[in-house]
Length: 473
Ligand code: SAH
Ligand code: SF4
Ligand code: F3S
Image (cartoon, rainbow, N blue to C red; front, side, top):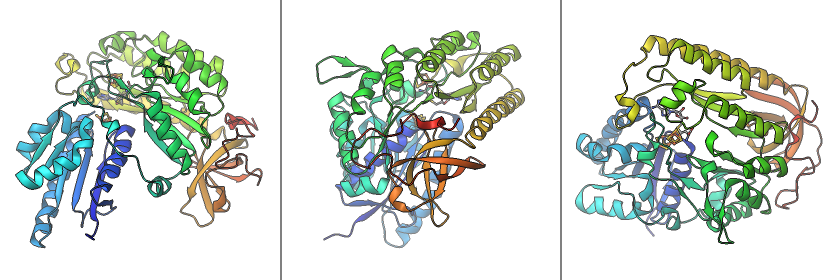
């Protein structure tokens, strides 16, 4: 038997890339590859890239510079190291990568990962291989599912892609070009994936998509199902305790989604709902298709349905033409909503997007200064949110042994890491934890009861509501 070949994969960017990386590993397992944490002795290195901002894209070329040295060293030792570039930079700049970086053997766009074995074979034969078409078939129908031992090794929380691509065309964003048109996977395929994961120990599923609440997949009844309907259905699958979804667009918040938050305890009361700006003028220039008040109304609808719901968001500062007054509107919106956390970015012009052609660039100094002010406000909200957990009893889904011996770490409904001293048998269960202190971003506490709240694998509804979050408050 041939010894397994080593595959090292490095992902940048969003959770879609994290998920895709796993699917590439699963596909290449069939070709005799095993995943390796070390790059030095890898037979195949895949850079799974992100194109969203300039900084993200640039990382590819500096990484390829380092890999060239390693590849040459491997060749001196008589080993061949293949290098593949996948992800959104591959899609956007595939031809350029081939021209600029002779070290690269394979370039593969995000919709063609099921062709990886074939592309590697072609590269062995012809020297290089490139595929950045959007194939007619759906890659998910061809990517093999992970094996049971692989699922177990990946832990109790898993991503599942339900929708890919985007039709929104925000003027700053590359995603509609790199991931293509919006496509929803059929419900039956998603259910198969979730069942398989749950059967092998997964307890929490995060449904992912670039525009996840635009989901409109074919249901088993022949009708089109929305995200809210899908969540309700997945919550019935034995073993699944928690459901999350990301990333949502404010415009696609429909009644079924709100009702899922109201009625389905497994749906976690934590929603990532990017707004980008609080100024209607800027939102319009961004082609976001919603106003600041539309966003406020969406948040209010969630809050009316689920009292303990919390939000996170994404912001861009320094979009072309953004004035101090526009920026003040963003600060006002943040103050009014009150976030559990948020990501904020300086605007980065992306080649091929409409915003890259816009005049009135905001200067680097002003961008830096606005970013610092916004981040200060968000940090203060995040830290207040985390501090509010102290003294309360919250439900924690335990994930793994922590670095400190004897400690187990899990997450609250709001994804805050929480540590307790406990035996490893609690992994995979939601248990109430009395929170005693906060260390940076981690909550420390003790088990409020040694009884399992949800017998792992029973599929029983949690005895404490999965909305269990502020029980002591
Ligand atoms: N689909 C999601 C966002 C995907 S990209 C949504 O619609 O919100 C993740 C985040 O990157 C975006 O929310 C935005 O805040 C940021 N981003 C996207 N393009 C950017 C650009 N050109 N410059 C700076 N930030 C950008
Ligand atoms: Fe990009 Fe806008 Fe689509 Fe989000 S909704 S992926 S920001 S184009
Ligand atoms: Fe980046 Fe592509 Fe995700 S550009 S953010 S990896 S969809």
